[in-house]
Length: 345
Image 1: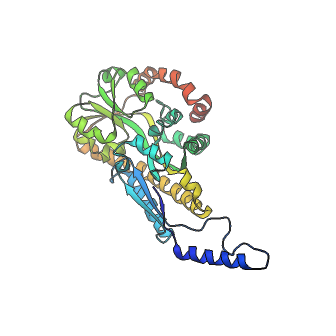
Image 2: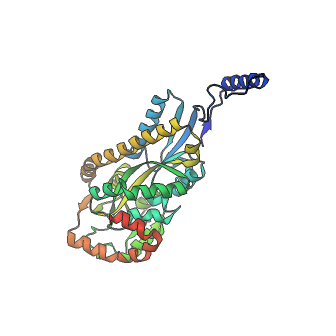
Image 3: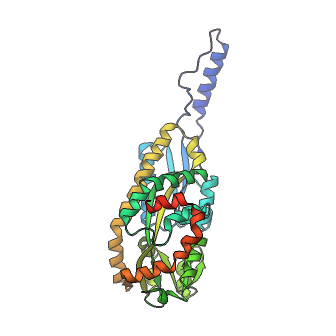
């Protein structure tokens, strides 16, 4: 939670000026330098990041921390906490803390934001996007603006959108090429109902748990597999406990660099503009870095022994057909207007 450092010297000076003004026989005028804008404050802020220090998420958070310190000569300090340390490893609680103001900033997936509002799930609807060009076209236009409005309703100021990326399937049982191959597998998924419904349609046994528990659960065989973008798979070292990966790009996972809106609104216009600019730059830095690193990460995962498979168009069509009931159920939940914005219609 943010803390303002009180400037006693400034307070004494202001009190003296007000007293002299009150004793004057002249018409009272506003004290010089005390306009409607609040004076620049010093802040000690806390930021939560879902994954580890080796992720592109954390690198972007470090950039924001450094840029804020440099541009304000240390007036704004940002303390970073990896692996959701501020919420006991629970991403859902981190989002709730951000909304309520017990956490100042976070870097979280919109999938987790679905806990606050199911409409955020539309961005990760199955096989919504074919490629990153389609993703950028939506988030740089109406779809991104609509998300910002919903975030504001939930007490979150959006500073920028990053990228967790297209989510891929890993498991330690068999190579998955078709819907028949995935049936019966125990797959860990994020704790939102849309993914539960989706994986039940595919015939799996979906398991929900916080990400901090995934590695140990895979290691012990409690679950057979999980699904996440390459950066998360790589930074969490899942190649040590998973043999197979299916590159099916079934669900896109955006990130929100979010700030508690009440905190943002309480700041001076200059500080708001500073966070807007540096936040957008940090989110864009993460997005570009994630895309740049993915090829290298894939090669390292292959070198570590993971077996990669990319489904054919015909195989992807089978997966897509199997999950169409998700659209029938969630169109009303997401809202037709929002869904059409993400479809580019």
